Image (cartoon, rainbow, N blue to C red; front, side, top):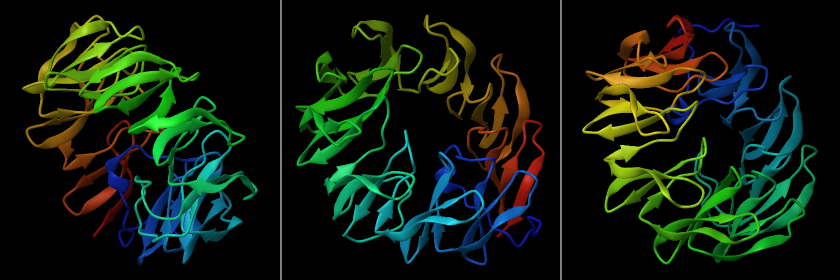
Length: 330
């Protein structure tokens, strides 16, 4: 097996959190995609036009069309789709028909979406304009308007919304009449559409925007933290990033635990958070102490003890000590 070297260009996948199975991550060599492990070994040779992240032991890859490989590199679902999403709760949304631009985070496009299982068999036939991944046993789908289906493909919440997100903590963000609210799995609006923007629930609270200011609501729709912030992120491990000119972190009572001081900040992941100070990204613990000093041009959240970073032309993954586990140059 080849060692991860400077000729290897690591794709940052939009600097979001990385997915993995057995700690395998997508990398490129000479314009072809493969997968490496945290020791720097390439374990699936670069051979694909594109590659997504592993979930549930499978990763979408493209060879003219999209299919799925397992962690040994075996093509377990042959390339046949015009688009393929990652697996969630045993199913993956796939598209037949329409253009096939590379867009790892979007789902829009012509053609029809259905869902396949790990064997590549259709569990839900292609019929939807758009489709999201399953969460809490339900998936948001679009048939002119957005509604929700169960894992048999049965529509359990009729298409009626302008937009719909995935379920989290038993509720999902929906947009109706230009405003955002929340529905439960029975289709009941548990929080009426009233917000300019709304985020999924996490830690029992959700960030919402009213009159151009962000605050947090509980599941009754009551304001737990009054709208007062320029921006806000999700609560993870009891802390949420918020911006009041600069960024800091507050607890669920609205008290600042880490004072406002950063240029930017991401939610906590694995006990640390990526923050930007004086134009450079680093990582802090829950007390606000830097465990990796600001030094990166870009930084993603930690997943499986590594985080993607970029500094100058050098891309790679670092461990919690800030040491490059993988590195490459353009």
